[in-house]
Length: 239
Image (cartoon, rainbow, N blue to C red; front, side, top):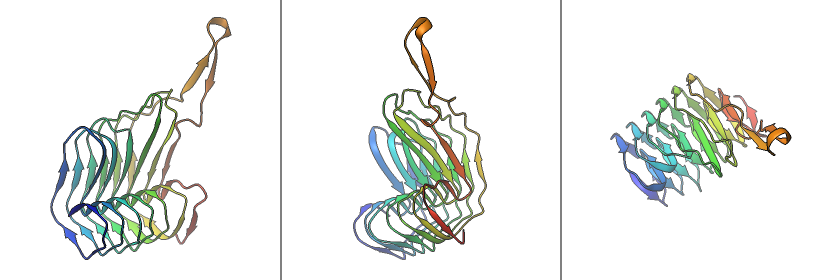
């Protein structure tokens, strides 16, 4: 419906298919309703499939909002399938409803499938993010009375150079990453991850007989959960 919007959205519906196959964009926001949103959304519905098959570095991909900040998201519904089959991505926030959100999310639902089978270009000396979920890739505020029924299927090669500074893989039925309160949330969608991940990265210092190798066990963690991949100090009530 709109790429960038700084006003409220109420009772809007998208039935069309959204496809992005472009290239050269450092940051891309793609969604059935709004790519980047800074105000409230209420009773927004996306019925169309949303697909990215292009070349992007940082991608926010979802059914309702690629990136949602500011005011609340209430009673929004996504029924479209969301898929990434593109190339060159190093940071991904992807979900049925919102790729990333910093406002409250309540009474939402997703029934669309989430599919990741594209290729990635994780940095050799920088930070990367991979966050895929049924409701929101990254939850920066509370989620309540929300359900996900959509399946999540991830089959991409997810190999990170051992020299990458830091990053993590978060995959969850409700949220990939959340450090907030979740109340009365339910996931019934199957999560299937068949990706090949890199072995535990190592760092070698010195040469010859003096060389030592250190296993960096915390450098590239993988978190997969039925509700949340990585929850930090999040609290759960009725989940």
